[in-house]
Amino acid sequence: MSIAENIAKVRLSIGQAATQHGRNPASVHLLAVSKTFGAEAVIDAANAGQVAFGENYLQEAIDKQQVVQTLRPDLALEWHFIGPIQSNKTRPIAEHFAWAHAVDREKIARRLSEQRPPNLPPLNICLQVNVSGEDSKSGVAPGEVLALAEVVATLPGLRLRGLMAIPEPAEDVESQRKPFALLHALQQQLREAGIPTDTLSMGMSADMNAAIAEGATIVRIGTAIFGKRDYAK
Ligand SMILES: *Cc1c(COP(=O)(O)O)cnc(C)c1O
Image: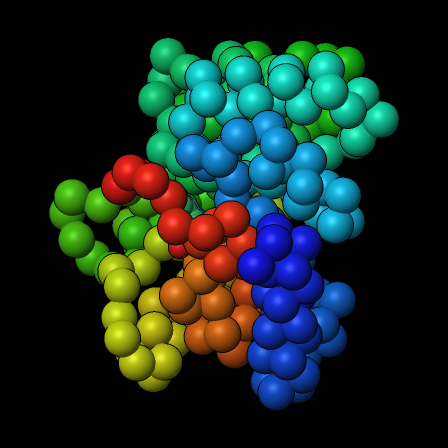
């Protein structure tokens, strides 16, 4: 199957899942995760109407952006950094992306805000939440989301859009839904505290339907669009 066919299939599944759960299909946005795939794959997806692309590895992403820009200067793509953010990498992220999905510390948020070029609109931010409760995983603890959100909402170079999570893999849909429901409840808590957000970045190829059932507004899909990745990334 071609990338265009895969995208059509994923879009159809998104629409079906949304409708099944009483949601407007247009409220669920598709982020194509192109990590480990080259500029040609991105261009194929863009030719199929895809605009938003997610990347995890900074240097790979910047190189790819430059190749795409050179081959197809007509494309206006929207790049999302979805990988963990080290503090020595904040400047290029602030300069080369429209969104960062995995902000989980105040220090990173402050640096991104300070380093966002003034000629660009504020960097859209999701706070990554550790919904699976494992010490090793990145993400802010659920009990600390509100305090971090309060800080991020005040930073001039950033626009707080919502929450993001990568739950532990689970086989059945019921187990998959629980951490997504928690993320949704945390978003509700922010709203009640006077910090409204419009984004829940949750759901990947294997758990997209469960995420949509619990209110995902961005699903991050790699494998179902581009195929299996060559190496474990
Ligand atoms: C790789 C990745 C994805 C895409 O995962 P697939 O299972 O290939 O759809 C989504 N989100 C993040 C943060 C990722 O690292």
